[in-house]
Image (cartoon, rainbow, N blue to C red; front, top):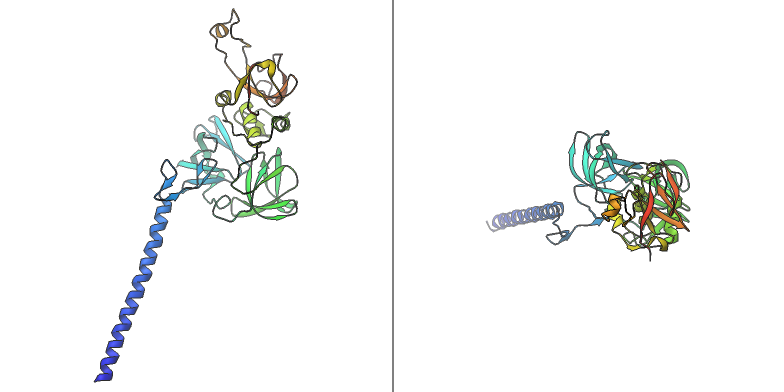
Length: 344
């Protein structure tokens, strides 16, 4: 009887051990699901969520509502209709926060803070090109346009990236960098017209006023496009915004915001890199016979960047392209009435 008793006792012990192992496995699984649930909960206003810090890129939280732009440049509209007004543009690989979706459209918030509607086919919720992988550098396009190839310096064209586009690199060869692209693809950028940011989450180095003006001159002759941001079409505040951005200075994208940036200076003290603001009425505060002037109010309608002497470059709505203006002469888009300095 004793051997049978021992066998029975051993079987009970084995069963208990199996039960304990199963409970342990289930406990671990539940713990993983609980941790995943915490990560997926929306962040609060401070960016913290039960001890978890939400990662941001240019003010966009990288959460379940984040998407990246998959095309070279995409329009953002006031309404979910291509016939409505374009309110801004977004560049390839830029993150956006998706607020809602409707019949092939997504309402998004962009890195410039503007909210509008974008075609859903131009964004992807796969954000692995900007988050979740190991990156060595961040590559910023500084030329008007830069081709991303399938091989270092050659091969098939993967995307034509416009000034201000940013990619994350994971491999390099001499002066060529292999970067992650939207859609789980990779490509190569090589040579001039790019800058390397190390570490990848670092700031774009601030340059100087001369470099800022030289960047703007690259757009000379480009077509005017209301709320455009690329050499395919750009407006005056867009020219200032994108050129300042790649020179390490973050300015508002709106004319009103730029009018309150930097330090106000007299027109006679304008230097290279200063912003000059135009008024169509050519009103000067204190001038008799003009209602705007007499009230001390001047309606600012455009902005340019001083390029040296009395010259400035601007995207003219009435001119129809990026042109050179004279501080002391009126052009179709107005005359310079104010100035501000953003590079000291």
